[in-house]
Length: 152
Picture 1 (spheres, rainbow, N blue to C red):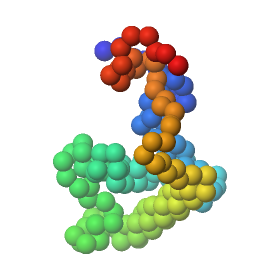
Picture 2 (cartoon, rainbow, N blue to C red):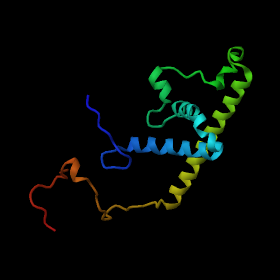
Picture 3 (cartoon, rainbow, N blue to C red):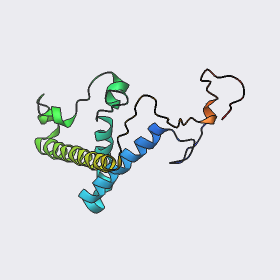
C-alpha cells in the first residue's frame, strides 16, 4: 500500500475528508474559545467526543463501528458505580467537560445550519420547464438516448 498525502480543499480530497476536517476545526475552535491557553490539555476529550458522537454518514459512532459496542464513557461510569476506581471528583469534572464540549459542538452546528439556510434558495420546477444539466466530464460521458451529432 502506498501513502498518498492529501491537502485540505484540493481536487483530490473527497467530501467526507473535508467534512471531518471542518468538524475537527470547529471542535478545536470551540475548545480554544472556552479554555484559552490550556486548550491542548483537553485534546483527549475532543478526540473522545468526536469518536463517541453520532455520525449520520455511518449511522453510528466511530467507536461503535470499530468495536461493535457502545463506549463506557465517564457519563455512564456513575451509573455502574465505578466511582470507587477513579474518584468521584475526576468523573464529575470529566463529565462536565464532555457535556460542555458536546453542547458547544451542537451550538456550532446550529449556527452553521442557520448560515446555510439563509443563503439557500428553494427551487420549484414545473413539467416542461427547461433546466440546465450539469455533469462532470471527468466521470465519463453519459448518454441520454440520443446518438450521433447534437444539433442545436
